[in-house]
Amino acid sequence: MASYSSRVRTDAARWVELGYIDAPAAQAISADAELRDRRLLSFGSILAIMAALLFGAAILIFVAANWEAIPRLGRVGALFAVIFGGYVGGAVLKLVDHDAIAEGLWLIAAAAFGGAIALIGQMYHLSGDETQAILTWCLGTTVAAAALRSGPLTMGAVALASAWLFLVGVSFWRHADFPHIFIGIAAVLWLVSLWTRSAGSRHLLLLSLIFYGALLAGETDILRVAPILAALSAAVFVFAVAMPQVAERFARIDGLLPVHGLIGFLTGMVMIQIQIGDDSGSAFAVTAAITLAGIVTAIVLAGRESRGLRWIAYIGFALELCMIYAVMIQGMLGTAGFFLAAGTILGLLAIAIIRIEKRMSRPAAAAGVP
Image 1: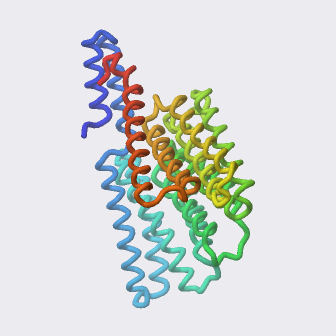
Image 2: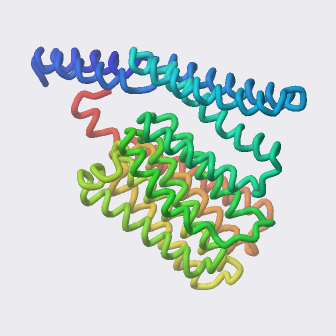
């Protein structure tokens, strides 16, 4: 698969032939694309990071397997040596422009820090549970990400925060209060992601915030919290569509904020419908109509610019039709009728998607873009 810069060079050459731009502009575009391509994770960088994670796991497993045979001072010293060597060695390599290897070493150090928390806690019989260890691990990784301005470390910190939210939010044995502190954690991680220029971390943070809203609804009152989640998500979508430049300056996720708004809206509406589904009355019909109207509105307002948003809308539309069948017409049709209705619905959905995709691609075809 061609790289980003090579595709841009090919397109720029074609634009020169078509008379859209001149040769100096094509050279400037190609140079900017090559500069951006260097900042992106290449396939080799991804392999280096994966190798680093495997190497870190191997170290932790080796230490854990030989834990009893290693003297106590040697255990602590080995763990901190890996942490120190990973962070310092990565910083040195970063200075000589070996970014991929440097990021890999930093990830090894972060993994060793997490292992050190668990192993030392076990060794000294420290009080606490897994969630506290993960939160401490997240804090250390966040500090390292901010100090080293590392995108992969930022992503790791966000992943740890999301794991902590999941464990605290859904674990049936927890005795603590609901993790409202996650909002503050997310705000700090958002600022760190802006500092480290990690768009992927912001994507994961937005999804985690939607998950937080869903957990809060399930913990308190779905019919009170889920409508707020849907309304706030719809407001985010409208804001991102009405003022895209302002929204992008805030989010910096390549114009994909409407996608997260649609996901949050669908999440809230589905939770409402599941809660009131047994009633099978007018309330469900109203919420289903609102959901379908929201999906259509999202496609009309932002579907042309985002194929990902269109496919999320298609999936949401299909799931909504299944919910309508399950709640409203389940008693009217037998098994054969169900298959007939499902086949008809899927066929109509396929026709609608094909027509929408063709209509969305007409402006690009008219401009000479393949």
